[in-house]
Length: 365
Image 1: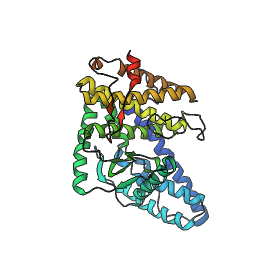
Image 2: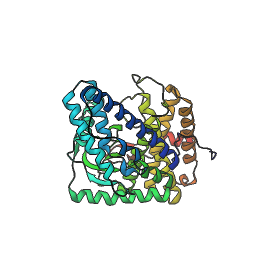
Image 3: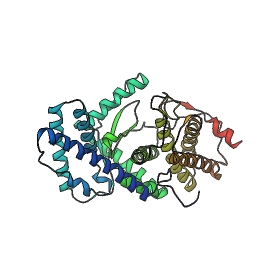
Image 4: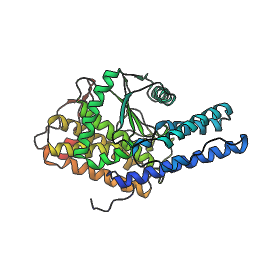
């Protein structure tokens, strides 16, 4: 690829991340200002200003997920004419703005804690359980972990963040722009969560005992932060023009998804492939190549579905070209020289699922 990168790119850069985040944050503040004005016109002045939000740092430590949860809650309560609920949420917003005003020095690394009982965390858990039931007909579980377990996962997450910083520094810079906090949990079905209604935070399920935790968290962090970036970038360009009522084959989920979901999955997988390509180039191991082979198959599946059914803007077409190049670059590396592609292997996240990625063997034949 040449050195002239588009604004919205699957190749991480700090500059692009900051611009996308600024647009998303500005859109949220503008919406809050509008909603506050509508409320005040009807019910009288609210005794706080949104001005402190205008000076929020570019560092991710100012992306408190509660702010975005409150924005969505106020929007929905006003649409539903729930006056008491709206008044209550504006009160919470006033306290949130004060915290922005009184904030200390910016943090470099995200905080890592167990999922808790705050209103926004309960909302995310309940929404996750509901959507998994609706989409898959299965019962997801998300349970808090002990303080000791949270500390152990923090150590594992630090290993993952250090590996990303060493081998994929552009992604590390993007993480510093978007990722404020990580909430870990025990459970089933769901492994990772992020949402524009909890922007700045990701949920991650603790890995199974037989799964390398540094590789597991490295993949999930790249995955969820890439969702954050793409969500922010889509506040500027919609990228995908397909109707949300359409359903297509997802590269990483068993249930059919809207094309925007397929595109998101393909985008984040392209980032994960870049990370594991760098890891394998630095020091090749069978374990890393198993991860990468499966990720490449998922990337190829996503590209194929987008090429068949996607209706994209110009920015989306550029991204699709990048996906193809990322796949081709990784598949052509010499670290595959002794790897047996057609050997059945367990899925990289464990669980006893046998994975056979014959698509890669066919591509290299």
